Amino acid sequence: MSEGFEELCRVRPIARQGMITLRGDLSAKAVKNAVTGVAGVDMPSRREARHVGERAILWMSPDELAVLVPHEEAAVAAETMRSALAGIHALVADVSDARAHFRLEGDTIREVIAKLAPVDMSPAAMQPGMVRRTRFAQVAAGFWLRDEATAQVFCFRSVADYMSGLLRTAATPGSAVGYF
Amino acid sequence: MLLIDCPFCGKRTESEFAYGGPALAPRPDPAALTDAEWVDWLTVPPNPLGWVEERWWHARGCGAWLTLRRHTVTHEIAEVRHGR
Ligand SMILES: [Zn+2]
Image (cartoon, chains in turn green, purple):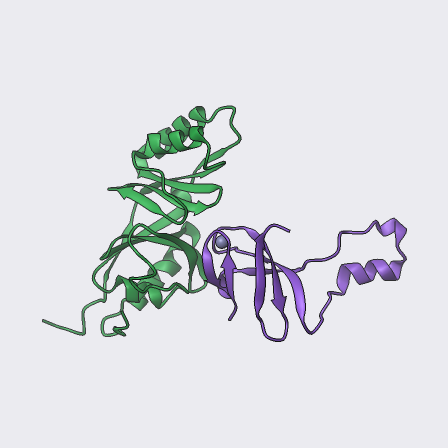
């Protein structure tokens, strides 16, 4: 065992993640149906993330959701949502290639995120199933805890290299603080 | 560091927000003002010791524009509301 020299958590870029932005009245039945229909997961409440495998719905703001589907399904899913919402004031955009996603895995994901984002990462405040839009050091980002030992972080693809460096630095072997 | 209680996101640090300037009186008709009054409205922000109303944008959060009442001496925030 090389204790103290292992990375605090595994940082893995998700090469291809389909992601569709929806803006509209989130209380409208047509919007809910369009989103849950293609995602195959339940509608999240405010500040919630619901996921099953690669599919998820993330609350992004009072009038915005992010819908995650496998990358190869994203274009068709966006089209399906668009036709389901024809005549309704809503916007659907396939942003799959404009975002970068990272998976953090390990027992110290709370600590790695807490080094980078102004978020209370205590288990009482940040729980699996909550989504958080914030910043990681200098760039806008969001994440949710898939479970106690798995987080998914996303940001603009233009800053993916920066984010990758940040996460790897925060997970540098021997840099554990042991706060949580 | 201010903690701003966004009505949608909860208490968030100032670094997730962008300052949007003072909540000014409604825009006057420039034709009805003297040049000095117009320049004053456009470029001279109120800067009292005490309570001010100002706009903050939750740029790295939900994206909402908020109006808050903040005390410029104590930094106490008395009210946060969505929009104007
Ligand atoms: Zn907010």
